[in-house]
Length: 212
Image 1: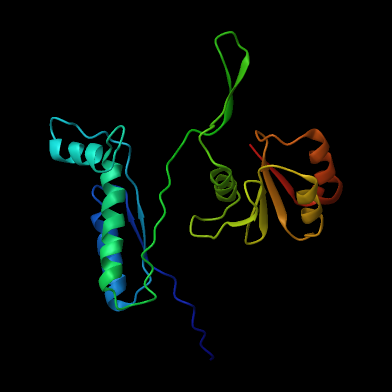
Image 2: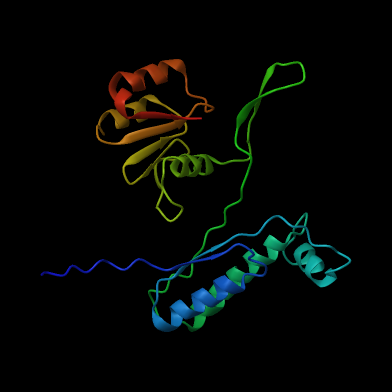
């Protein structure tokens, strides 16, 4: 009987109550020590810091971090940032990954009926084109650790086997026409003209995916 070894997957440490970011600090230190490749996911709700109960933390966020409204997550992010910088200075493992990304949950764009029973579009206008592409990637089944590559800045992005379309131009249409095996995802709420949509359907109907 022939045995087959599977490539080991990195351990993922999930902390739903991140607090000051102790879990992330510990994971990065351990990776630096034993050349591990553990990953971490921290979750922290936007819980305001009470100025009366935690004056030092509140003042730190206001004066040092210049937070408009101090939240516990401000402390979390700063702790992990400083910990990674400190570990990097004394780390003997040059391959240790000490980077991290910060994501924030936002309400999605949606249609709602108001009191007059008329439809209104509630649009999330704080998202950057990259944020929108990341959301499309997540909705298409990609995970946060997958690289999202810029094809046309602020307009078209790519991850593994899929394109994420934010804005359409003739140049982008020509590029997509030359990639017959890739899926193309776009949001129904983005500003894509009917003409561009019809052009996309003319050569990519079977791989065109509209995300609501």
